[in-house]
Length: 110
Image 1 (cartoon, rainbow, N blue to C red):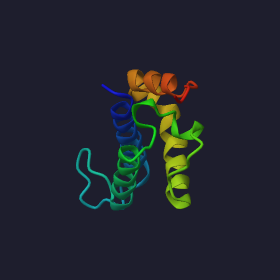
Image 2: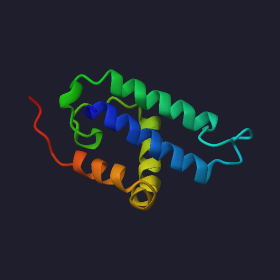
Image 3: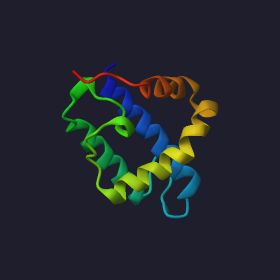
């Protein structure tokens, strides 16, 4: 699995955790892994941004990137998601959490 595919799966997990803990009342038809409208839009936006990344598979983590391709509002929403889900992932998805921590290590862009 490539770097971008790993980041996509991590983002899906994090947004799912955040939505299920914070937006159950907004998702009236909440069943299993469905997201509320706001979180579904944020997920689509994040996946689109990853697909359009100019660095491709050699990309650094978004936090370390010099090109900020998220709009300010979505960037702040993603920060909230990561602040909530990041620490909790170690208990619910430990392998994904370790993979995410390793991906945050600095990388050189060629």
